[in-house]
Amino acid sequence: MLLERGDIANSWRHERWDSLRLLTPNWQTRLPGFHYDGPDPDGYMTMGEVVEFIDRFAAFSRAPVRTRTAVTGVARDGDGYQVTTTNGEFRCRTLVIASGACNRPHVPAVHDAIPPFIRHVTPFDYRNPSQLPEGRVLVVGPSATGVQLAAEIHRSGRPVTLSVGEHVRLPRTYRGRDVLWWMDAAGVWDQRHDEVDDLTRARRLPSPQLVGTPERATLDLNALSDVGVELVGRLSAVRDGRALFSGGLRNTFSLADLKMERLLDTFDEWASTSGRALDVGPPERFPATRVPPSSRLQIDLTRGDYSTIVWATGYRPDYSWLQVPVVDEKGHLRHVGGVVESPGMYALGLPVLRRRKSTFIHGIEDDARDVTAHLVGFLGSAASTIS
Ligand SMILES: Cc1cc2nc3c(=O)[nH]c(=O)nc-3n(C[C@H](O)[C@H](O)[C@H](O)COP(=O)(O)OP(=O)(O)OC[C@H]3O[C@@H](n4cnc5c(N)ncnc54)[C@H](O)[C@@H]3O)c2cc1C
Image: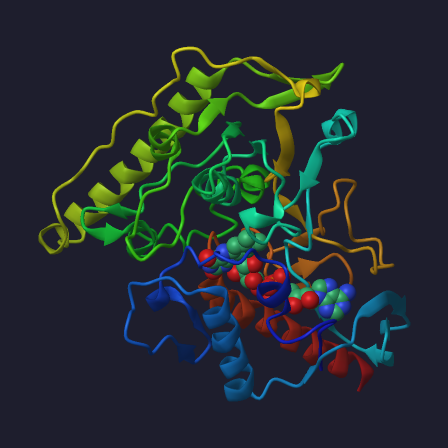
């Protein structure tokens, strides 16, 4: 039984902004036994198209979904779990937590010190720039959400300042192919959780600076500077109405550039060793991220020129309904490769759950197969213990 608090494809229907398209290309948008079959394999789906894709998959897979059924409690009960919902009580022997990694926006504590007349917007509230008051906008966070919203709000005519901390820089295309094609081909997406050097860090990595557009445009910090978005350092504190930014932009940029170069080296190496070098264009290297000649270290938010702060500072899962003690002090589920620290409890769809691709749509098939195999084994051994 599959319990969903809203509708099928709920997060794509209700928790995304209007202009969002997938950053993964259509050919990569696949679910078990089901893949994109439209005329534009290299394009990027709009939210309406994603909803239609998942609706069609639900019909194709005949998934036993009960919609409008929010899980409000899960407690250990004998050799299974008692599940309380808005639509009745259930008991189950095994339970898979697939409630998503991005249930709520994460807003840092400095938020409390922002002057009261400034409007706070999170990616869950934001739909399009027409909702925002006139005036300058401070976007905090330079990952996929932050760069996309900074670009869109800037296009609407509002001056935008983007506060930049650690980020993952990627070109949209490399040697003539989508950069995510390279991740796939070179085996980066398939890297397993038990092969990753620092798993905790890998699980906290921000999303790459990518956007899906028909032009396959790169949306890195140079592209944003070119159109006039102001870049400042990481927001470190707000004191007496002043937002204070760290001064290490040069280091932050160099680190992101270096990591991108290393990844491109991995792609080049794969192309030559796999004999595919002639199927792709020649190796490319991209200009370093330009450091602004003088980046502001503070902004006086009390002056009234900034009207809005957009918190593009990441997302968090929500396990407030889970009464089994399997969540750590940071709010993350304790699990090894999707096997949660409670008998018969599993997870899917979390960052680097079993592979680097685990939180992406195309990542679910391999993870689900592995986790299901463990679950079936658990039920089998439980049955043999009983008999
Ligand atoms: C802004 C954004 C852009 C993204 N872009 C891409 C992209 O381009 N390509 C890509 O592959 N991935 C992308 N992702 C990641 C994307 O979220 C996952 O690929 C995919 O949605 C994961 O599916 P899921 O079913 O694990 O989680 P979700 O889509 O979050 O689904 C979880 C479901 O559980 C339901 N739920 C939660 N709590 C309860 C409860 N207590 N009771 C009942 N139901 C509950 C929710 O309503 C939701 O429908 C993006 C994520 C975000 C936030």
